[in-house]
Image 1 (spheres, rainbow, N blue to C red):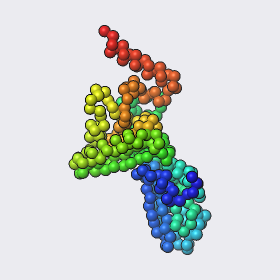
Image 2: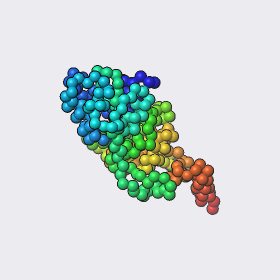
Image 3: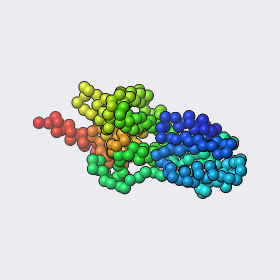
Length: 289
């Protein structure tokens, strides 16, 4: 997988709704920008990439070296011709520039991770590990996940839910790891609640995903990006609504009730001991007189 062109990039980055493709005309030539909206600085792109290319008066652009030397005033601008390398770069916050006149591709670093001030989580406190939590802004939350899973297998599908509210909803999953049946099931439930006029929060989806006959929770919640990323890596589907500072994960298993946020950062031996003690405490308090 080494042939790098616009079509090959689109094929690898399919079902990533936060990846932007913008086409511009510079004289008789066309150039296309490829970047991830949630982790790039739009102002830098406009000021140091788009504006210099559109206003270039040095004649026809013939090759990538000319663009790097004479047009784009960014020291990070480099040529790339490997598809794997280009995919990792764009998922890490770089912008790719494709030109119609030549096959060379230019990559520039324009990262802008949305990181809020560190706050202590009120519901998922940890002794060891990151304190960062989700916020009400969906793009910021998407950025938090992208920083942790830099892989073309991470798919993010964005929906506008509610006939009147048009609330943005992001669905995360790992291609090749998450079962297709689970992806289709969650997507169908999202399309079902789209028929409603007003959808503000995730409770509408929670009602559809919960198993009616089970007395136990069948969907999980987290307000920490590192735990949400772990859920995704386990093959689960994670859904986030704009305006809601937590994520919904499916499926949720009974044994997860005995897990704590610190389990993800402790060594495996201590983590297993902690879960076993919690289960024994639950069993003894439930079964013993």
